[in-house]
Image 1: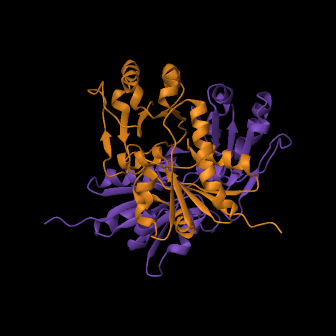
Image 2 (image 1 turned 30 degrees about the vertical axis):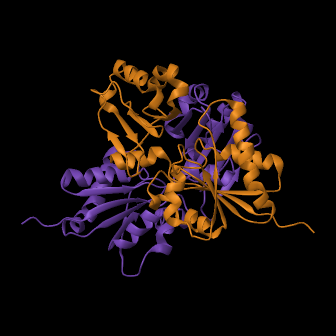
Image 3 (image 1 turned 90 degrees about the vertical axis):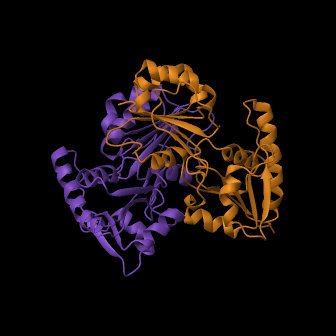
Length: 237
Length: 237
């Protein structure tokens, strides 16, 4: 007789405001006995953890999983493996596990790698994901502007990987969203200046979180000290 | 003494599954006395209307607003004006109005034009938007694949406007989402074949709706009869 396996739910919990979780995400989050999330840094709670805190019940078990903010492939794989091994035994014992993911779970998310690692070890595990609010939509909502309309071409890139190609990107898009812009902001500013796009650019830091910051015109801001979760929106045309 | 004006809430209600509305969107939707939404075609209820149907209360007044599916600018402007004039008197009488929008309200949404038309007539009106689940995220969730990871360049375009530039788009992206693909699907298929991308492409029709359809490999599908709300995802690299 085969044992019943638990389901791994990948639940997008949105960008910061706890009310931006979906009704479905909230229902599943509160249904499971075990809730996992990415650990915060410097002993602070992580963003997903902060978002779901008001919704959790005291009897739910929480698993705080470490994912380093590095680009080293080997170090990342070790972290995914370690996290997978913390979740897998619960699933194999038939317990459902929810993984809470900030933003949307299909959009540049650690969950993609974690889920694949779990499936590599046990292909029988069933995984279900719940989509959520991603940062470009949250940012435009708090800015009070549309992200795209009509025939707009929208390009979204993590800025730090594509800094060399930004001029090409600006030439082929109507709207550009640069994620993870903090570490390359100075360079991005120079390129925006060349293209005369500084007045058509917005930076949103921690959209919908309590300490959200908005910069509406970048003309006088060649430098900004930004946190990791900062994005830049450019209305090219 | 100035009269208190109502607030216009632009509420993203997601892609089809009523549970994919956010907790915030649902709270505001149920708080207002007047709920507006785009009318359906052929006397059928519209998508946003179907999504919110289970959440509405009997005492709420509904406004079904007509927005034609045309590209004629004058005809569109007349529709926005007519819709604005149905909503504005309620706001000016101090009543809050919720406009329910399928997908995300900042993402190629009719609400953008409606809100602007209302503001043109009465700049005092306060508008608040609630972000929501947009179709690319809903589609990848039902497909069980990530939309983007790592350093991916994501390009999103409404296919029918950009059919001539698709080869250029495929050359400069890792992931491409083609919205509104139905009317140009045959031509898109030919280009995908040239680029040998047919096996790396997915079509999702009415993601998360009851009559959702998924096409996983387009190699043997040079033609597909698709509805308006169909999108195509290409994993270029």
